[in-house]
Length: 64
Image (tube, rainbow, N blue to C red; front, side, top):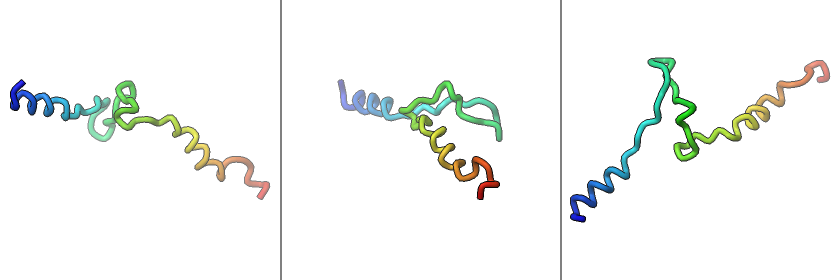
């Protein structure tokens, strides 16, 4: 391979493709079917975090 071909191949490997979106304008959002952990879209701990954040507000307020 020539130097030009090497650089061209490196440039192709370094490009980032945008994640597909759904909707338009203000309603535009990432397509959940297209997201994966390699794109920084690991939401596996989101439900646990939500529970932790809402814990102080759950339950009966009459006990306090």
